[in-house]
Image (cartoon, rainbow, N blue to C red; front, side, top):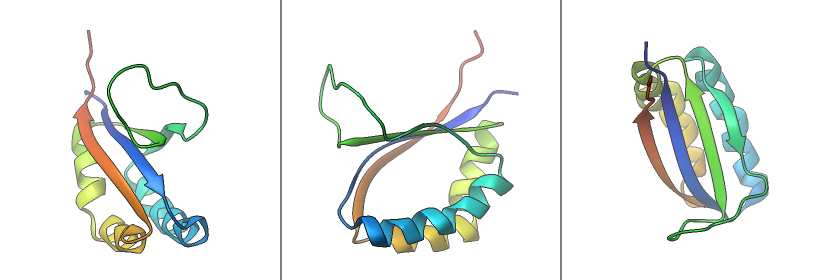
Length: 97
């Protein structure tokens, strides 16, 4: 089974309110087997353009990654993030070479 990934580049404008989003997204991420591989931290942009924060979340399958994003629980959490941050998010299928 091919793993799935959320790959996000974002900017947080209100850290205190963003913590509410983080608390709310914990349950759906756990339910669908999401595991943080990258969650902020040091990085060096070497090509192109990206927002200042990078997050990568691994899921046991591409389908689980899609289902988590579209779940009622995650969509409720996502509403907490609107207006306090900006993000570009791609849900990608892993490669088993």
